[in-house]
Image (tube, rainbow, N blue to C red):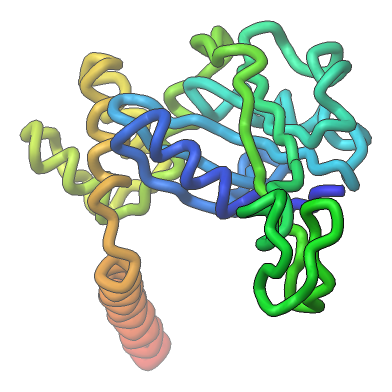
Amino acid sequence: MLLDKDIREPLFEFLEERYGKVRILEEKTVGSSRADVVMVIPDKIVGIEIKSDADTYTRLERQVADYDLYFDQNIVVVGSTHASHVAEHVPDYWGIISVEEYDTGSKSDVGENADVNMGGKAIGGGTTDPSDKVTHKIDFYVVREMQTNPKADILRTIRILWRPELAHIQETYSLPMYKGKSKDFVRTLIVDRLPAEIVHHEISEILFERDYAAMIKQIQEFRKAQAAKRGKTVRKKKKRYRRKKRDA
């Protein structure tokens, strides 16, 4: 039985082989759900939900609704126990990938008729060597290709970007900076002023280049500057209040 932890790393290798230029992000909050995997490919953000053999469909309906709001396309990756009926639980524009595990044989299976192999006696092509373990391989099968998500909301998709990344788009396309405005205001500005294909492209390119350490530092500096501004405003108000009190 394959568990989530057994599937992830082989899945990432499969996605890189299949889609070429990709960046993998894990465990991202989308609405009231948490996306197992977010795959960044050129001009698209793909949500990937993993349902291992140990998982159930209990939360899938809610997850589908949340994924559909945030991602351009979606895929459900399922263990073999779900492969025959998962299509009943996701929209027809969701991609489906099935995960299969099989034995590749023992190390002694290099010579079926060998009398001695790996230091042990072969019996019917096998060996008594205790180190001769059966190995396993995981394969992925595309049951259904992913298609464009008709419910995707670009205002939701762009929420994956951080404030400095939004500012980068504003600067690149000479949009007003509005430094005192909220992130929601800035997101709406970008989506309203730029063609959708440009916004999609910028989101993907920024995520491809995202440097988490540098970005966290920028965010901390931004918050520190904002806190300093708020502190000055509070102090000024207090001084004005005290002066009025003395004049009275």
